[in-house]
Length: 208
Image 1 (cartoon, rainbow, N blue to C red):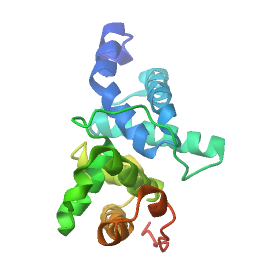
Image 2: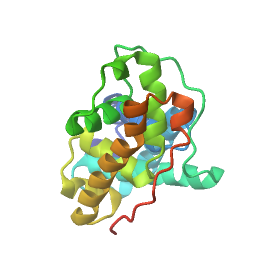
Image 3: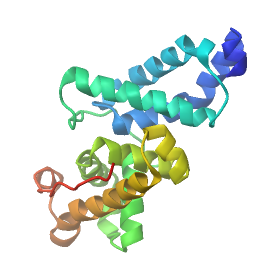
Image 4: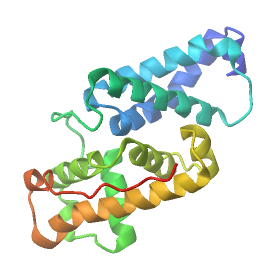
């Protein structure tokens, strides 16, 4: 990033190569629609480039980058006025390469001992977990992604999201509880994907 600050085009291309896939995956989860993920990732890179002259090394570069990404995602959500809506149509995915939402839900189920054999079926699993993760708040989704996929510490997530470490712990705890509650009716009663979309989730208070 210091080379980018000095207008090194090859360094900026290298940053994009290293982080593009990670940003797209993040935007698939915290952005307003799946089909906007690549555009939002590109917008993040544009902001990084525009801010290059003011960059100062401090926290990890990834912390700074994901802070910008979070702002881009929130602006996109506000601009279309649908904070919790996700796209109904997704690009086909290989069952051998599970999406972020699939892995997040699997993590929650494994931790709670609720992994049913039938959930490993690719198409059905994808629909169930997308509905479950989409039902989480924006901040819960982002905290889970940063913890699960970026292996960030509580402190790093707090710096990225502008929260306290206590709030981050609360977000992650609530996200796992909410995923378990949302998925439990499917596991116990065999609700089909369309039915789980209508399962009521009690609002939870997030510590600021």
